Length: 111
Image (tube, rainbow, N blue to C red; front, side):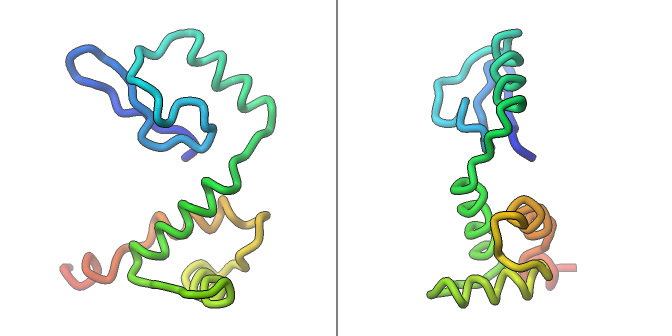
């Protein structure tokens, strides 16, 4: 998922809860308009991808899953063991998706 908005129930104002585009995160809530759609379309056509945001998402998932790697090598090993993929820029999106779908140790034990 590249972009996700949370909508206010009363005024239908949107706040970006996930934004890899960088267009809407940390902005005041606003009503989604045709201009919003144009901005998303332009970003999509530009081919821009915020690798730093995806790397941070991967790191957040690793922590959520109960790991605390101290070095880059440890991070690479943890990511590979969890996702089966090498921690390279070409794999960032796939890794983030795989890790987002993994359950935490606590949720697995509560079954």
